[in-house]
Image 1: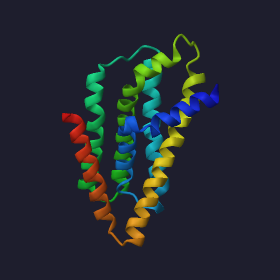
Image 2: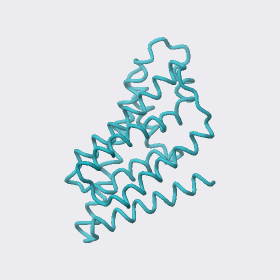
Image 3: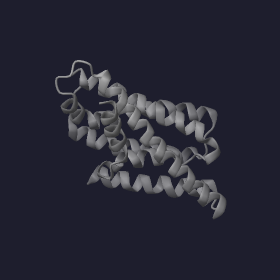
Image 4: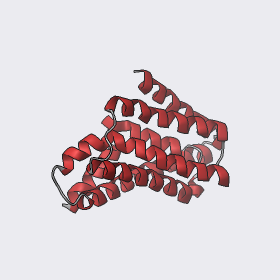
Length: 186
C-alpha cells in the first residue's frame, strides 16, 4: 500500500497533464545556481508541507473551495513566483525567507487543486496518514527530480554556454510568467 500511494504522489507531480506543478517548481528554481541546491530543497519541502496541510484539511472535510477559483489561483502562484524572481534577481537571506513563506502558502493553494481527487482516493479511510505520508513523500521525491533536472540544465546553460545567471533567470521566469498568464485567461 505504501508503494502505491508513494507512486501516486510521484506521478502527481510529474504528470504532464498537470504541468502546472512542474512549472511552479521550475519557476522556484530559476534564481538559484546548482551550488545553492540546499536552499531550493528547503523551498520545495515548504511547498510540500503546504500541499500536505491542505490535503489533511480536505481529507478531514474541513476545507472545500471552488475548483474554478483554484484553477485560477494555481497559475497566479506561478506568475507571482516568476515576477518575484524577475524583480528580486538573485536570492538574498531576506528574500530567501520570503520565498519559504511563499512556497508554503502556494503549496496550500496547489494542494487545493488536488483535494477533490484526494478525497475520492481516501474514500472512507479513517487513517488518512497511512495514505498521506507515502503520497507526500512521492510528491517530495518528484519535486526533487524536477529541481535537480532544472538546476542541471541551469548549470549547463550558465557554465558551459556562459549565459549569465541573471539572463537564465529572466528566460525561465519570463517563460513561466507567460504560460501562467495563458492559463489564467484561457
